[in-house]
Image 1 (cartoon, rainbow over the protein chains, first blue to last red):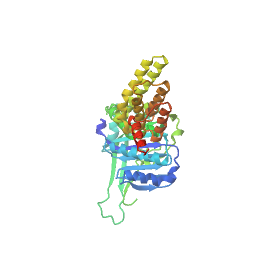
Image 2: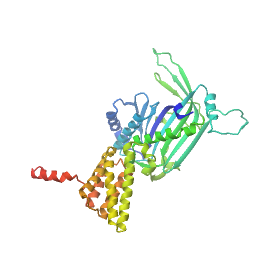
Image 3: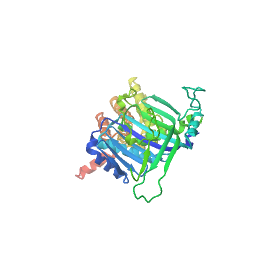
Length: 234
Length: 188
């Protein structure tokens, strides 16, 4: 299996900072400024400690007292638009809330490949070269393990990366409102083999050091370049 | 929630992570509480470990500024040894990098302002040698803009003021003519 065989399910960019109490005063200004750049932005949730806005049907922005994030579901793999949105969002956020330093910056990519059953998804990971375990019966259980997980983390120079492979299950259920006249509701269950890559910093980052467009582009380049070394054995 | 897609959590144990939980509901743990948190600021080289994989402006700017920083250090070292010509040669290497850095000014107003000021420092010197104080001021400006390429215009003004304080002329060569002209016309 190669990275190209997996679909990009989710991308998340997040920044953490010291409590930005300005959010209590200036949340309106923050979203008004951002709405000028992204007119289709619409409010999803507004509470004292967090405000969440959505763009289209797959991109969500959230501003909270100590962190802010942008996440996109099934974005194009180039992530060009996502990184531009992230850059716009964090620039406006830092300007309005007077944030000068991030405590942590993170960027997470979740790739997934669908399988018909949990057993088949588990077998795909178990038969890879990345996992090894002693043969035979252990802990009074025989046969192949189910829902395997595998993770590695590297940290140095103030930054780190965490990669994970695992089997996930997702269930979607649509509950129609009264007098629903649309298509009949249906349930959907998805089993996926998930490849999750989290790039992050461990040291503080000055806002004046950070360009989300450039940093995300670099992270995407590294993921595209190095992932097959781990997925290639599958 | 009627009329919308309901998201049902996958079967998980207590130790499972929740990759698909909407980020708006994710529990945020203060990074400062983590034993792995390093309170020092990250260096620009650790943040952009693959500068050529970033945008073309940032990659070129970081590479050019690193070379400029090295050349300024070479100039100071030569000055320390009393080698005036070698010192001047090194500063001319810095000047040669200015056009490339000028092309990267899309990085931000602050970056553009500092690079412009440095470019005019060299042009206004008209080939004359810089004093040690001026070389140090240029070196500090290069170092700062490399460490913080997205610095704000206000911070750039502070850097430019320090260049001026060292006796460097950071204004465009035509600026003096323009001000003279406006002065004659009684507009300035």
